[in-house]
Image (cartoon, rainbow, N blue to C red; front, side):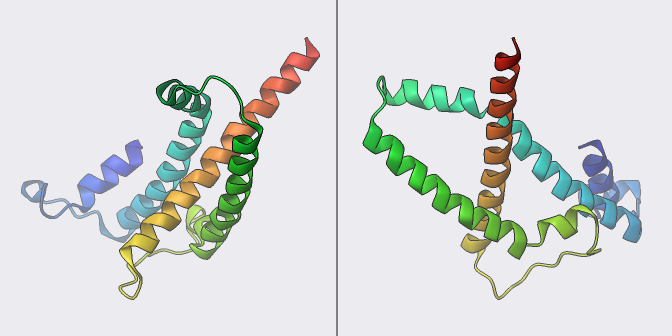
Length: 146
């Protein structure tokens, strides 16, 4: 996050124009790398706290008992959503961007803004889901050892 901040300041030609900074190509590359890693790490952090969010939603919705039909429906929806999340991750080539395979990432003007945000929310959901279930699996395995 610190790299994102520093490179953002050095690249800004409007807000920090009085500082006469020119980050150049290297700063842009590092900024883009920091953006994607920041996005993934923020999503992982959210996944680590997802249990608290689920509990808060249950309390707000006043859900006190488990319903087999509701649980089954939500599980089917989660699987379908996970399929789209994996598709979005690979179609947006996030893995390549995390290792700086691409030095530039330009906006595709032929694409809808809504699709862009849906894809990135899906990628965030994938990271949240993987982290949440990894934490649950680790907690279960540590309980079994005790």
